Length: 137
Image (cartoon, rainbow, N blue to C red; front, side, top):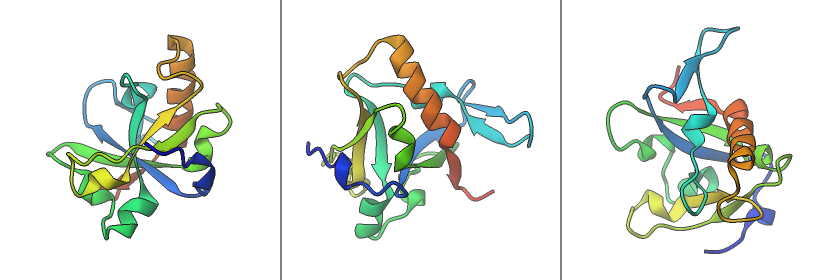
């Protein structure tokens, strides 16, 4: 795993695959459109699993390549969304998930698994900045 956070452009899109499942998406009170909740950005033991758009593009792939089963959507947020909450995007290629695994990364912070309030702070920040990338609205 390489720490390339300092090399991520603030405007690079970071993708997260989110299933259409209860608690993951809710209607926005102003627009009525569905938006992700902090629950859609759950922490694994090593961080929040994401994919970097620049690396997907490098391999000739787009956000649609991340969908593995019906009912999954791909949401994206700019890399800069991690900065205010002092989280980082760390490259973590997954050779067991070709071809998209080469673009895999993790959102991490000062410790691998922060306490619940810290995880929620980061998850809420990412959900707030997320926009639907696939399928198109």
